[in-house]
Amino acid sequence: MIRAAPLLALLVSAAAHAQGAQPRDHIRECMACHGEEGIAKDKDVPHLAGQNFEYLLKQMHDFRAGRRAHREMRVMSRQMTDAEMREIAAFFASLPR
Image 1 (cartoon, one colour):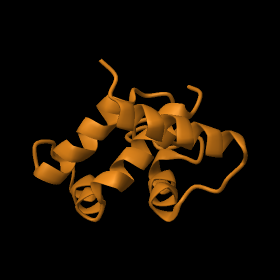
Image 2: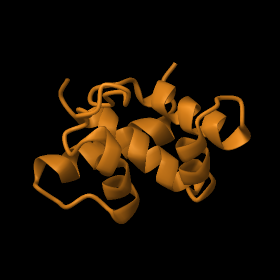
Image 3: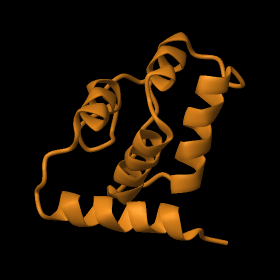
Image 4: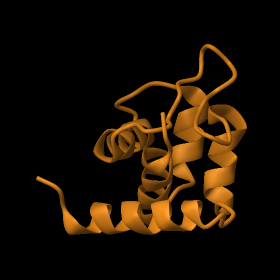
């Protein structure tokens, strides 16, 4: 079942991206490792482009809660609000694979 808030965030992010809007700072920080188009250059960093919104959001929550171990992602996720996590997940989910 798709919830309205994630769907709305995905639609807004996709529309902004399609119109050439610049990603917000918290999204640009993710791009440093995961790539501007969601395709990482480092083989040890996962590609996020086209990934499922709910999956991405869950992973960020799991990093923040310590349920998923990764030092850099734990630090990054602790600095994110829930709204920023939803925007990040929506942005990368909206990108083509």
